[in-house]
Image (cartoon, rainbow, N blue to C red; front, side, top):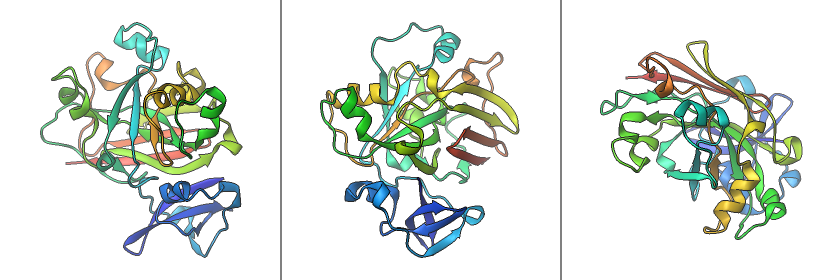
Length: 272
């Protein structure tokens, strides 16, 4: 099952994908669907909205209660940063104002000259979860989408805390749709890639995560209750611009493409 949040007539509407077309649901976004408690398999498609080719994607969840992100969660990323493997997930956060639609332009920020890419598998929480064991954690995940943790490296590294470089307004594509776990499982092993102007910068498999989505739910729910609509960016593989020699960053006019097999793609143009 695939669910999306679409911009329609000046507003937004959750929609379900059937036969290359979207049909309306009763909520303004996928977050609302999850909060409602209605089982995803019981959703009833409403009126036709648009073909998949004409879809205008809003961020999948408009105002997630919480957005967790995980650093250094692939061996290839650890190696390029010359870091040791962590014993626990390295967590940081974003705010909902950082989110963008799957095909939205991303505005470069004048205060940063080091805008970088991080293609990621994103887990979406479907129910209230606290102190979960691994089996409970698996049932807490409604499904997955893809995202790109676009980062301002100069702002990220100017203090020991990463927040300023990680939550720039409208900089983080999230979408295009949620694929439910009944379709792809809770530890999907999918091909992931990120390209800039058609050149592959990152390539890996989501099955190579050091801490998979269920591991992350167990870790986070031990100290923080997870809610329907919470988002977990699970980490990025090697190939970031900051680790290249010479360093390489995004500039106005660049086309950033993030893709995960079976989860669709985000295509975002960088603008001044």
